[in-house]
Image (cartoon, rainbow, N blue to C red):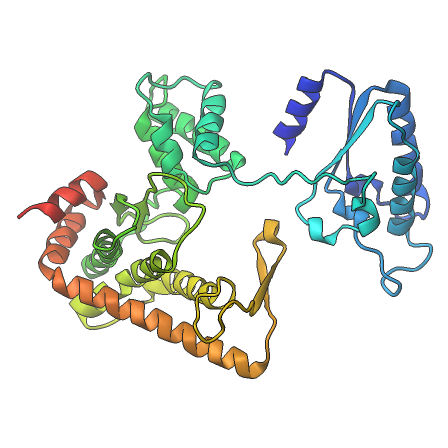
Length: 395
């Protein structure tokens, strides 16, 4: 958000007043309202100018009769802000901007026409956006001439602007540690892994049996993904432990951004999540705690298919779950009876079980390749997508 403020101020080439919503909140009643008056008085004197209020939900939350008293400091501050905004006309040259991660919590009086009546969602960047952001931050460091920013942007799918900046910074640090004066493609790709899974955990030593289990687990994910249609190609598989707690991971890279996913694609993703556990069951005849995150992701996706995406014949296009705070992780709440909730749970279990069985079937049909790929990964600890496909497609 700080980069956005700087860009707005620079491009507008006018005075820029910036405050955080929390700066208006004071212990003593009336101080916040006084700060609002002072801010807008200065703005009127410097017009044309821009007034920016960050985290406006600190003072702009919905008012309710029982929540606050009539002399509440936040309410008085909000009332003063509403009054100041009403006092503007089209000729004073003052533009008011505000930012929040919780737009649903704002008071309706604040978002009505004539006040903050235009909402501009700042979503995660798409593929071209990620490439452009990477190039902007890469100007601050020296990079090799052959760096493919488009490929790095593909690997960083779902990354925010701040995360992309961190990726470039991590690449520069890696180059310095290796005694080089510039960052390479490998530095940037490794930096993505650092942001996703943390640094390599040098002091984590797995036993031979644990290493073998992790190798089969990760190849199980990759093999199930590769054998299904509409699955993203495998970019890299590693069994080097990371500081995030992951003992290994499979990196898949989409060739382009997906804005819509059909039922089959979602089912394939669930099958891929279960592929690691399926490989453990098939090869070792037992299960470990390594699939905890996979289980969580598969369950979350299966529940969304039934409760939010209307992909259940029993419930048709009825929303059983609503999402709140979409910009803060997307908390969900069920909107159905206890009986219906029980039926939802049954369908979630059935859906995940079906895809788990599909993953087992795929691995059984390709047991030879599973063993060959797992042995390679066990020996080398890392396998690239190119090497993976060469082994998989070899006669």
